[in-house]
Each structure stands twice: as C-alpha cells, then as structure tokens.
Figure (tube, helix red, strand yellow):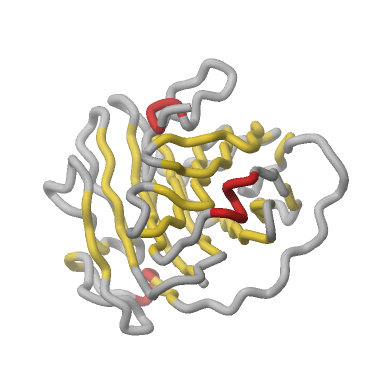
Length: 232
C-alpha cells in the first residue's frame, strides 16, 4: 500500500504521511495484553506553552525539526495547542524529534475541529538510516484508524478499524498511545481498549525519530490540535 492510501478504509478518503470519547470496532482476535511500561524520552505539554511559533526544543530539551510540502505558515502554538495551519486543500506538515535509537513508543493527546474526515493525525516511528522506514505508522481520522509499517515510503497495513462513535470534532482532548512489542504494535485507544496488530516489519525495523503529522487530504478536512506529545 502506498502512503497515499494509508487511511483508505471502506472507500473513505486517503491519507499520506510519514504519513476518543469513542469506542472502536477493532481488528478481530484474542484479547491483547497491556504493553510493558516504556519510559518516555521526549514529552511536550502544549497546553502549558504560550502562543507563538513552534519552539526550538521540547520540554525535555530535544530539538524539534519541521518538514513537509505545506509548511507556510508553519505549525504554531495557539490557544494551548500545537496547530498545523494546513491550507484548505491536500497538504501535510511533519513535526519531528530525534532523541536517538531504540524508540518503541509514541502517543498524543489531541482533538479534532469541525470538518470532514479528510483531516487526520499520523504518529510515526522511523529511522533516518533507512529513509521513510520504521515500525509504526498509525493514522487516525475522526471515524477510523489504520496501523501499518513504513518501508521505503510505502505503508504496509497491519490493522484497521472504524470507531463505533466518531471522535468528537469540538476540540475536546482524546488520547492515543502506541507501543512496539515484538512483532505487534499495541495501540491503546481512547476508550481504554487495546488492539495489537502484527507484522514482521514491526520487530525488524529500528526507530530513532518520532513524528507527529498534520494531514488534510482535501478541502474541508478537519483540523488537528495537539495538546500533549510523547515518545519513548
């Protein structure tokens, strides 16, 4: 699957990317045990940051970098959240931190604004030594999620689901946390349930960089607000 189709669930609009108050119809299978506690190596509480441009460093001192085809204006802090400011058309912006090798966890507290399900958030773990390759590419739209691995800029889907109740689009915070456990990507959904899709590349691919991606596939797609971001 190309990155362009990473959120193509049930014929819905796609998501690219390095590129809830909700319940989910998750991938079927045995109950997923809780993941091990992976200590955080980076965390930034955007709710505590003053309005202004993307800061040079996170709360723990690790620098942020920014890339993407649509970063003018770039993401900035506004009203206690990091906001993407994507144009009202197909576009993306990627906020990255590289604390070093051995990353196995990424998560965020975030909210969706009004708009269509063409707006989404992606959480990605990858290694700069293997361009656009890594064990986690987790894309979330207001109505669905898709988990995959990323190899040479192509997403291989390993699991997906639709939310029984879509994520509210009034900006209220919801939380998602993903942990690499062997060949499984264990994802804690905002209602507290766990899914654990598996794929051989999950265990095989290293990760040194964490990425939080703002994505809009078409005009009218919902904005994403980040309130808290972390990786470990």
